[in-house]
Length: 312
Image (tube, rainbow, N blue to C red; front, side):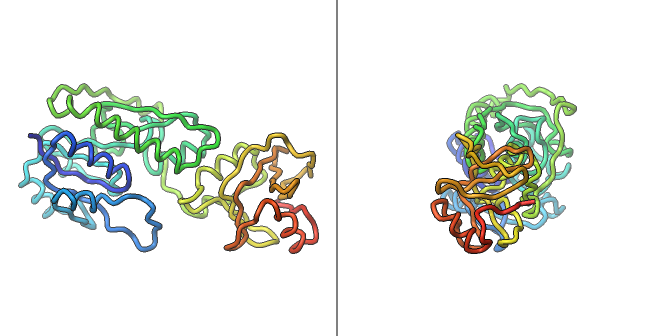
């Protein structure tokens, strides 16, 4: 039986740890994160799954602490796995397992190396992404690839919907590759790093909408940061609005204002963007209250005395 130390968090961590257990991998220890009180926890708990299987769980601030690395070395693991663990693992830790350290990344590497790859893929209007199991080296997301599983991104998918697909892709990829990996038969291929690039983390402020952008770009931003992420927003004379879901309008309303404008038509809420393209806004909040499509015109009229609000 092969043994492993597993660094894991989030839904991908839960599903991939489940795959290891289904393949009878002896998980000697699970390293995860304490949930932050400042973060909305909408995902499943790796710690709870490990506890159900009587696996020791630790949540160190620094997994690369030399004393902790020495404790890991004493376990003599065959493998080290990282599944959506948020901290970088350094060379002394990666060198411990007899049969390598392996990471599951939420993109089709070498594209979208780095942070929040699903959100970046949606923001850029990609029509495909997936999950990649690759060997861990000190340079992040740069090691040889063992297996990939692609999933489609549909034009109106939110980042959460895509993330759920990527979670399943990660489970499928690991389940397919693990028998060969455990038996020492897996063949890894090098990445062409020039064919992709790194992306950093995103902040709530990155959800600010620039309505002068084309409609497709605004739509991609809205769905890339839709809940449970912080959401796209815009400061207007009404106050701050949050736009939580949108569609390209079909058919287009007859109204065109020639500038970025929020308006109501036939009980629906729309926005004209910088290129004249119009989005139907399916879910909008003003402050903590929803702008209900059937009454949005009345709400806007009550605040502005007009049914059109310039967003520029």
